[in-house]
Length: 365
Image 1 (cartoon, rainbow, N blue to C red):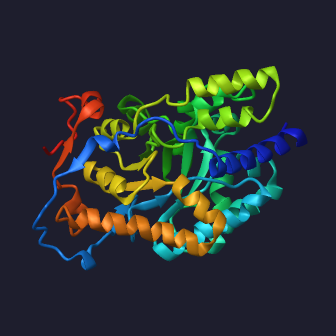
Image 2 (cartoon, helix red, strand yellow; image 1 turned 180 degrees about the vertical axis):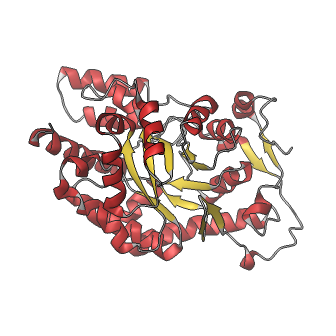
Image 3 (cartoon, rainbow, N blue to C red; image 1 turned 120 degrees about the vertical axis):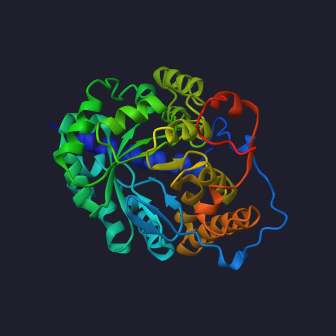
């Protein structure tokens, strides 16, 4: 039974997370993108004004490989942000994922904080969101409700066990989650995406998920928003001894995880459709991820402040990403996303060491 106190706690925690991400420095670690450098094409033989960003993912065509990653929902104060993000997805012809829908599944009064996205984005590719632990505890019924809530085209089952481990009130038992994912894939027709939340996914984990019937992987690698850091900052707002201990624990694990580039190269070996996310902070980062083989590139934090400000600010941020991506494509002679995947690049430093010379992902030196 879900009590009123638990419902209130889940919702208020969502607002805490939103405010901390908007106001504090929550990024930790190194994505690995700085170790990748494109080989400049001095004679690109293409027209930058005619760059074609269109791409396909899970049988859908997108105007751009940019994907608005899961951010918010579950608190009344998040409605405006989700409305703006959804309108941007509709305008730009890109996909969007919502934040964890747990709060609305516990308290139906909060459903409108999520359902607004389909109202504002009737044609966009929308991804519902449910935690693996909640799936295990409540079964496919909760997943189906999450999908219906936003008329979703896919559902992400998120893996956030680092964050759960840091939270004293977190779910510390991960046993049975893979079986729950397998059961879900058997029970529903909607594509299932497995999504990390900032610590990356290994080739082994990706293979296990694909074997369970998952349709795609969202790597959410380390080097961007650290939810251990978020929980540490959240604990720091309380002066109790327990909170100070939680704050220290969060900082200790703040840069835990597989760097985004390394995770991407690992998961690509499985042949799965991949959303590259985790610390993508420019159109150049996105171009590098796409050149390595990602299908879409997810961003969240860079769009949060603009989404809190206005539709215009959000459009400016997305346009800036697209402009940077276009220029990177132009300067590598890539008229289309498919051409970008043939662009030469150098991979150096710790990223090359971690990937290893035997990784079959093509490093085009």
